[in-house]
Length: 347
Image (cartoon, rainbow, N blue to C red):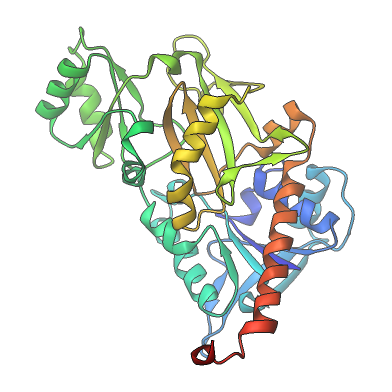
């Protein structure tokens, strides 16, 4: 199996990243894993999608750091490959990372992913589904039962009225990730609301959301794969993120700390409620951020943290993802062999 992993930049990948773990797991299972950066793609005159890509020559790696050192170093195998010849292309870039410095890179995975998909490549997550999820408005397309009450606007007075009505609220930018520009607004203290709104509005529209008291204890990242909670060897791919001090953000690179997660009926019910929409949109690997009985976010672009889940549960979830890809390729090949040449009018 030949797998391509599309990332923001091959040379900024880290050993702990979920993408690195999946690529290493693929190589260790005997597959080819090619990493492709946002600036490495081309649509050639013959209508083929090609890329300057990197892979490793060793077939067995014991650590992500050793794997990445080879991939990013001089010993890497660097070729201009045909993306159309891949079995799977995984879109693992985070558009928010390129928002200010390289805005041209944001839609690249979706554009070239669509082109590769038309040529028979399995592209995950589905680029058409990702196009719908280009900002946090996508979250509003899921059932109300699992969403906090939300207002999306740029109007200060509307946000102030929302805060007075709902009590404590959180405001954050419609675009972006990683906990940047997130503020807690107390309903009984709106003195600094104008300054907060001005700070967030510089990036566009503002999300004003009811504050979830359960979020004070942090949140749980639960991975979904093929529309189901990712479970391997009876362990769920999940972990908790807990806040530090007075910071309302539990994001790891915003100061949060990780802990083992207990996945109970409440989290599984939320997963079941969002499952139909995820399947409909072709979302193969997704991260749900859950606080109590509500979702805080649905991460469909490069959801990370499989390594954190592995560290607490002691199982290799990245390898489980590769096994699922093997099944997809196997059944796609079966379909091609048995049905592609059938005259559908005769069935």
